[in-house]
Length: 224
Image (cartoon, rainbow, N blue to C red; front, side):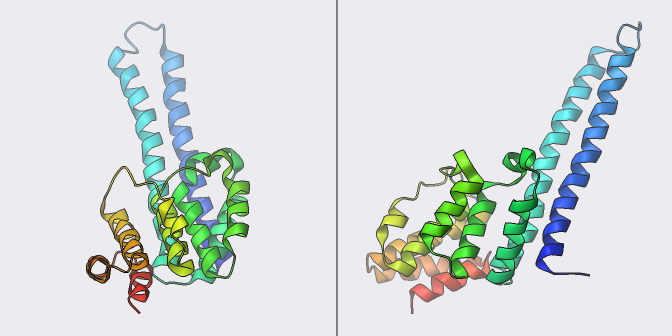
């Protein structure tokens, strides 16, 4: 099985597109059935119409959730394998080659900022990264997300400049996927404020959870 960055990225795009095409065919056939049978007595009930709309909505939701699971598989390259060079190639290939009409729906804010983090870890500076994000995200540049928090917090940790971590907008929802990142933000704040106890507490929580080994490594570096 090929694991080159290009192959991983192409497989991600093909999987989403294949699932989307199949879903669209199912929806179209369902509505063609309704259109064909409308007006024929007893052929289409209100329950059938409701079911058709429910099926369409469920299909859309399924595609969005499945796309999120597909993205998580890509995040594995950066956050578990800790291979920033390969992650950068994968992420940027996806962004460059994904159909522009679908980019707003299937490439999330998290994905863009995971790309930003991979760029930063491979030598790009924040100015160049912000220019890149502005070009690919457009009006979504100010959207919030867990990896945006991580990116800004890590910038502050490495530059010892609180302006980045102070610019963070808290997430509206805390779950298992983003709790470790929130704890890392707390750890960075504690480090910059020279609060050793708060730093130790935050790092201990991160080590205990260890959802993303890369973040655990970031946190442990703060104690060094």
